[in-house]
Amino acid sequence: MGIEIIGIGSYLPEKILTNIDLEKLVETSDEWITTRTGIKERRIASESEATSDLAIKAAERAISNAKISPEEIDAIIVATITPDMAFPSTACFVQKGLKAVNSAAFDISAACSGFIYGLTIGKDLIKSGTFNTVLVIGGETLSKITDWHDRNTCVLLGDAAGAVILRKTNSSSDILSSYLGANGNYSDLLLMPGGGSRNPTTHKTVDEQLHYLKMEGNKLFKIAVKAMADSAQKAIALAGITCNDVNLIIPHQANIRIVEAVAKLLNVSMDKVFLNIHKYGNTSAATTPVALEEAIREGKVKKGDIVTLVAFGGGLTWGAVVIRL
Ligand SMILES: CC(C)(COP(=O)(O)OP(=O)(O)OC[C@H]1O[C@@H](n2cnc3c(N)ncnc32)[C@H](O)[C@@H]1OP(=O)(O)O)[C@@H](O)C(=O)NCCC(=O)NCCS
Image 1: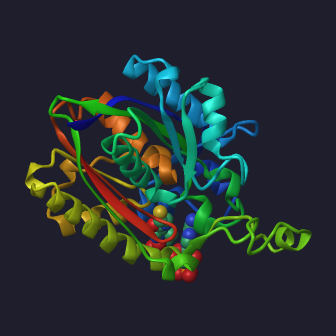
Image 2: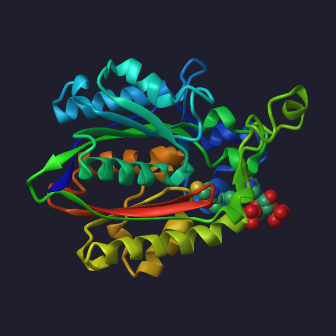
């Protein structure tokens, strides 16, 4: 028995924020952002749009693509670090929006690696016989936790959601392998310090700007390259194949220079690596499902092809999955 992605969908908010727009907000330039990151523009959710709103739209597209009804969904997993609220889970808001009345619903927090973690959990919940049909979503509104005065972070981030529906299959489609890792010793390199039980929200935490995403980009860069290359190699080996057998690598899109360095370590040409960072920037957990949807829609991969999703993010967390579509 394999696990098949029977439907996929994504949603990008309408508003486009270009590098030129950012030149008006902080001391930066289109030239710096383009050459140092590969990003040209990103999408920004409207004031009234929360993460669940993006996630519901992506999920509706995945449900329609899978040709199933929402009642057939047994579990909803939302990977996000920008939940609508601390609780209830964003997955419960998604369940309500979809009228997926027969599903369990929960969130997972693994930052940019969240979708890879979610896909692994979803696959194993089906393989163990607990559920038949699982909806896995990566959804973020990073713009809501971005300090728009901090040029070190605000140029990098964007909003999006991507969703897949998983189900058992007798076809050759399968999630062939999964490798997950983490190192909490690096938790201070990428975090939002305020609002949780460590620093509950007070006037002081707001004054100290603890409710924004903080990042030590330079240190993360080096760890990201190694962790992503290592994760992809381990997942590919676990699948019993080599990099040559992989039709397309879909990496987390935090910085084009990270992606190029990972491709070099894996010894694969950039033709085999999917890129959409120029359009969306880093959308955390939404990045890999949005990219997979785009790669399928643009015909870059087709049924039977092997893709490797690989990501890295706050935690620190990392991971990769190998999928035969
Ligand atoms: C953040 C990142 C783009 C910065 O690029 P970098 O090449 O490492 O740049 P540095 O941090 O060394 O900064 C170089 C200079 O550019 C400046 N700079 C930083 N952001 C800038 C911006 N938006 N515009 C113009 N200049 C900027 C810095 O202040 C610094 O100036 P200085 O030399 O006068 O001090 C890069 O480190 C990165 O992508 N890191 C990984 C991020 C990541 O993976 N995050 C999340 C994981 S999911």
